[in-house]
Each structure stands twice: as C-alpha cells, then as structure tokens.
Image (cartoon, rainbow, N blue to C red; front, side):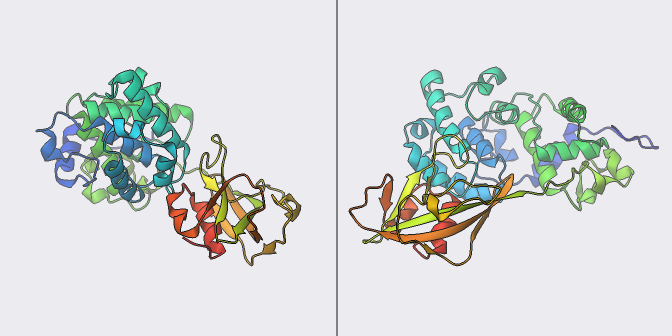
Length: 358
C-alpha cells in the first residue's frame, strides 16, 4: 500500500542521485570509481560477479578481505575454473553459506567451457548459471555491461519503500517496489546508477536513524514528508530460532593429529571438513553411544554454540585418544596443518574449545 502525502511532492530524478554518487561513492576493491568509468568501457564482469556472489547474505566489511585474497589467488575466471574445489572452500572458510563457493566453481567452469571465458550479457543466459539469481543477474548486466537492468537488493528496496511511502510485505508490494525501481533506472550510466542507489541505502537511507538531511532525494521522499521514515519498511515479527543439540567427537592420534571428515556435498556446510559428530536434534536426544568408536571419551566442560540462519546449535564436545591401529575413515591432520583445510567456523570453534590448535 502506498501512503499518500497531503502536499505535492517533486519527482525523484536519477541525475540527482548520480550527482551525489560522483562525490560520495564508496571506495571498494571491485569497483571502478565514477571518474574512471568514463575512461573504462565497463567494469570487469569477473570482479562484478565474484563480489556479488560474496555479498549475498554477507556485509561489505566482511567481504573485502576475502575478495582481495580471492583475486590474488585466482585473478581470472579461467584460473578459478582450473582450481581445486577444496582450495576454494578453504579460502571461503569463515564466510559462510558454502553452497556459494561450490556454485562459484561450477559457474566458472561453465563460463570457460561454454562461453570461452566471457560472461554472457543476457539475463536469460546468466540465470542459467549456478548461483546466479535475478538480483545477481541484474547487477552483472548493469555494472559490467551498462545495460538498464533493474537492480533491487535490500538496500534498494528500503530506499524505494521510503521514497514512495510503501507499507506492507506482500508479494504485491515487492512487485510494486521493483516496478517503481525500474521506472527510476536511467538508460545511461546504468552501472553507476545501480551502485549509487545501493550506496544510498547502505550509507544514508539506513535501516535505523537514516541521515535524511544528506539525501539527494530528500525533497522527493514521501516517507520523510510524512515523518514515517523510521517506520518503513514494514518490519516482520522476528521468529524465535529453535535450538538444536548434538555431540562432537575429537579423536586425537598419538602424534597429535586430529581426525576430520568431509561433510556431504549437499546440505548445510556442504563439502567442508568437520570432526565426527551426531545429527543435530531439536529434541536433544543425542547420546555418547552414537560416538564413531568405542573409546574412553572425556566430556569437556562447557558447550560450543553457533548460530545459523534458521536455528541455534549447541554442541557438547568429547575427546579421546586413538592409536595407529584404529581403522577410521577420514583425514588425519596435524594441528599446524589445520589452517590448510576447508574448516567452517563451527569446526574451528570445536577445535579451539579443546585447545588443540587454531
């Protein structure tokens, strides 16, 4: 629903936003700054794609060091396509949502094999690639190819919601937001505009306490004229996260090596390395009898806690020694070699809990 204002509002124009962006653009390692874009045909599609995949569900400050490490190790899509998946997962460790890393590798291989290392510049072809959805496709088209694609992420959605005083969270509202965003998108400087409106949402039109006085669209903002900018977008009630419980088993060999195993490719933390553990149950029905070996297990004090998107996890950690005679499936890794493995944050927490490295 669009809330109407009593006074006549001026219409927002893309020029106002672009003028603001020319002087206030964020300096980001994957971005060609506004003054230089006049000299460069467009941004490197590889860098745009890589940054947009990393930015899914992850804030800019967290992404920057990972991005810089990635482009140093894999400076082109061809080199990334030929990389070992485990090395990619290891470099991604700590960034979360590991399906992104697996899809990144799959996508790179398709780009090289089917498109000779050149990213397609059509929405239809981009959407057929692993890990690329409507938003990412639009961002690549606008920023890398200067096409007037409508880019709508969380920041843009918030800007449009306030600019036009739109309340509600229904599919119809989302459709209206995209339609209005499309009407504002210019036919020129498409990449700059896409990045400008995202920057506006990230730095000025923030979720709480927006800096309206510094906004280039202040005079056009209906929410501001109605003094409801802090009430929009409409907030959904937060769901309480369920708590799951499990047991983690640290098996240490006489030389100090720790047993790791690889998680299934599909599912949470897919393809990453972990210590053996039970299933994570909501009812807490896990027992030491589920240990991978009949050993003398020592329960360590305290618990390891970790928060996933939809649930919280609590793990009790057990530790035991194993001799060379024990036949176990997995990989024995010495503490000083742990950093070479694709370990998710959860596994790092478990190992640190036992003071075994990292």
